[in-house]
Length: 301
Image (tube, rainbow, N blue to C red):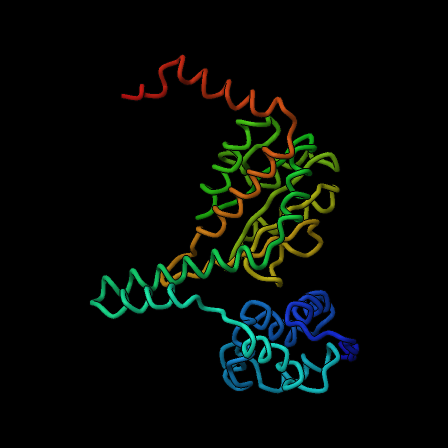
């Protein structure tokens, strides 16, 4: 693919640079897509790490970063990097009290260190969630869910329980939300009769699950509204999605963290309830009242 430069005019804010890089991503060569994906996933490193350090972490050649910068209109990598360095100069990314607390618990023995690393990752994931996603987009996605004939919620593997919980909670308020896949089937089976009146809320994280990507592709072909949640602008389920919510799933453990995902879905659920009509509150109250009457809940002492 021939690389052509598109000049950037008055684009001095890091967020604007990253947004433009995201929009340009599909037109980049595979090598530059790999480079851009790392930059988009790790923007805080741009201003503090050298070009060689970032190249090593991204597993690309330093020249790929230069080519990427030129591809979106900068004269070179240093010009691309400048807005991020300026942001660091004028910003304060670490709350001092938070940093002091983390340092205090990480100075102890191994259990304390593990606890500190987990705490730091959890706090960072939540901060990134609310920094990268806007409430106006959550409200718009919630409107789609409320107005849909049916909303299919898809999460497999580790996030299946989180996806199923969202569908369970949503059905307390509205009765058009189902979790897929059904037992003994694959996700695309549940979408056979779905069309433009329906919504697919799908989530997958590295390493991306094939059946989720295939379900999103099928939904796109059938005209469903797609709400995608993933961990990278380069995620396969973001291509063509109507709503894209990026979150961080970093953790010192061997598996992804679902903290930010749970928080995002709780926020989305809040908008679903807020955007639905007055009958929603009555529906939730009836749901719990019936359970009390059936003796499902223990009596308060």
